[in-house]
Amino acid sequence: MTLSDTKPWWQGSFGYQIYIRSFADSNNDGYGDFQGIRSKIPYLKDLGIDFLWITPFYPSPMADWGYDVAEYCDIDSTFGNLDDFDALVGQAHESGIKIVADLVPNHTSDQHKWFKEARKGPENEFRDYYIWKDPAPDGGPPNNWVAYFGGPAWTFDETSGQYYMHLFLPEQPDLNWRNPKILEEFDQILRFWLERGVDGFRIDVAGGLMKDEQFRSNPEITPWDPEGDRWEQFESFEHRYDIFQEDNHEIFRRWRSIFDEHGAYLHGETYILEPSGLAELLPGDGLHGGFWFEPMHIEWDPDEIRRSVVEVSDLVGESILWAAGSHDMPRSPTRFGNDDTGRFRTLALNTLFSFLPGVPVIYQGEELGLIDGDVPEEHKLDPVALNDKQFGGRDGCRTPMPWSSSSNEGGHLIINGFSEVQPWLISKQRDASETAEAQIGKPDSWHSYYKELLHTRRSLPDLTGLEVTWLDSGQGPILWYERGPVGVVINTSSESELVKLSLDSEIVYKTPQVEMTEIGEEIVISGVGAFVYLRD
Ligand code: NOJ
Image 1 (cartoon, protein in one colour):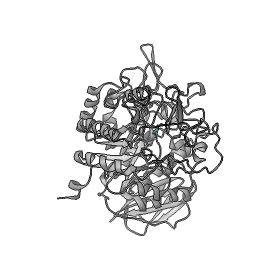
Image 2 (cartoon, rainbow, N blue to C red; image 1 turned 90 degrees about the vertical axis):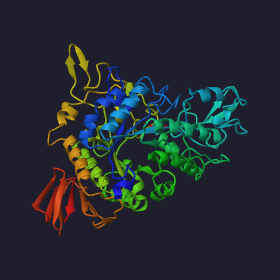
Image 3 (cartoon, rainbow, N blue to C red; image 1 turned 180 degrees about the vertical axis):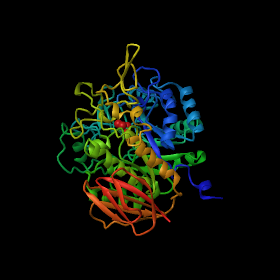
Image 4 (cartoon, protein in one colour; image 1 turned 180 degrees about the horizontal axis):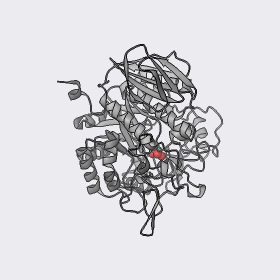
């Protein structure tokens, strides 16, 4: 038996995040859909993708654009129906691409039938599906917990005179995971999709499911300003009692046995910015993996990059999912400069991630070097757009994929090859150079740099289980590691940097800034860039 017979399918794989409503629109209604994804399977296959993580597609009133689920075992008609879903799974599998869905177990929509029932009163059989508490003696919320989106994590319910809890919007009431019925409901939901052929789930808010049994108030670190920036509000408290409770693990252990029956990948949105915290969340018999978010919060500084990569890689290794961007943060090229420098920095970071233990994932459009779309203030749709003073909300990273230049066919304007009608999120049209059409097949395009990176990775020997050795000095602009026969060097500085390789090494990948003065011995990286070599 070889290693590849025994290792799980996700080890060594490369993921691609699809924000479904903005990916590809097959029926010109302004929303991406399943048929649209199907039409792009050849594109994704050609790029070298192994699995797609698709953001929530369940029926939803869309208060938080699908992360408010009104029915877990169906499809929102915006995206198609169950037959379309099955067809996508079938086609993706035929092309050797796996499908990972997004499970939202921390909360439902307030329009879910469970919550509609629960809110009828304390005697209702669904009441304990959610978290209800009497007011504090002064009539205010039961404790000081705040929502990730700002404001208190409690909303008063006039009918019963009690508060219900929500870590996000009031339209997203939190489920009560201490109620065994919830565990049973979700066993059924997971089996429903796994039996339909889903290859894994990304668990939304994986650290939030269990709450402190006594609902104690969190220690306040700085005075809480309920009108302030949503991040600052959340960071005003030490989150000792509301999130990352140890007994979350019991839930994941239970799910793990269901996932293992199907050979499916169970991983989480593990929003903890401490390497040791992530390591604690990922003990062997729970989640197979967890996203590491710190790289989405760093400045472009070699020490910060080192700090955000080396320790976690040593501690967590193969269980990490590496990502430079997502539908929740400004696109990485925007954070790192909003220009070509930002794009090269992102490519260098993705090159760094690609050969470390763990699973790299790129966000749709990253392969085109996209910076954030330009969404006029009056068209912003993210519910946090107003109180996210740091980033102005999440609309900029959610604009439609630019498949081609806008065109006028038969009198219809087709916006960036996405749809004839205004897309659901209105943004400035992209330049021709940003589109997939302009970049595919052109050697000096972002698409080609990414495609070559992914294909290089596929062509190299399997690195699973091999240790990482850092070869740089631990300071300065060069980051350099070797893992088995593969070495990766990135220059984080915009200055030229010389790297001497004493071994006979074949350069198997390089970004355009890399010049070799004497092949295999002296290599100059003129500005931010990266190369990958293979030792004899
Ligand atoms: C994390 C998701 O990625 C984000 O988009 C959503 O708003 C929250 N979880 C709440 O579900």
